[in-house]
Image (tube, rainbow, N blue to C red; front, side, top):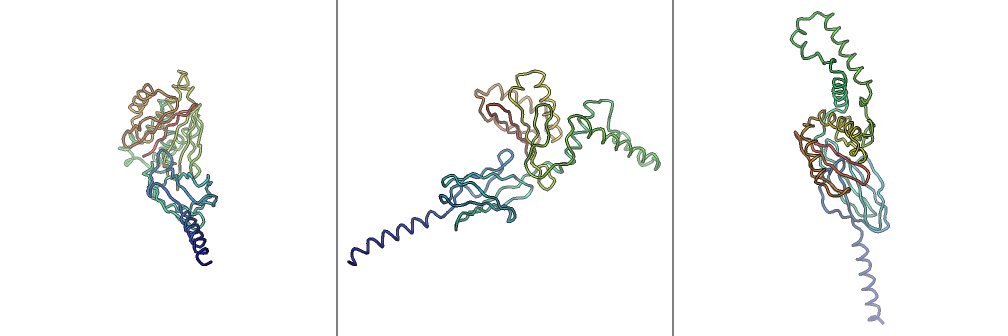
Length: 274
């Protein structure tokens, strides 16, 4: 009788050990960096268990468990972020690298709007540079007049067609639509971390619509510090080399600004990051 019970106990023990072995979360690596606008973390977890992710010890989100597999995206910030995944008794911690970003979003938007104003109205120049030598000797009244003129220019810049809003919500979201170009941003703590331009691929086949997209994209690229002319040249070359409507092109780098280009069957995405 005792000899018959032993195998049963052994099998039961092995089943318990196997069950314990499944109570874990795995990811291919511990450290991640953004690829485009987000860092993508793929992993495995216990089947049918709830999965959550806690970012920087503050925000907790639920993750869908696809039969033991999960995918989670993290928007980068200017600080490295620790993400802890929990599922049952198992947990796994990973780190998402910091992004350099492009500084204050409001400053970016104001600069973009000024460039757009000067492009649309070449006669309207920012006179601050040419008046800098005479500012020290100017009277209080002259200084007040100059400040008023700058305020009027700023108001005109921010109210013109195609201007970007001076404030943006936190996180990743569509900020504006200019013509057929959607501008998507990642804003964290009022800092512009990254920006994506999204346009239907059909636009590229229409000369007038393509020109409008190129103008908007060039203004954005220039405002972010890149050489827009060289970026467009590289983009056009890669576009000619592309053989499929669903492909990812090589990263274009201009003055430490990175442009990752991807196509879906109907849209062109250009991810702009540091």
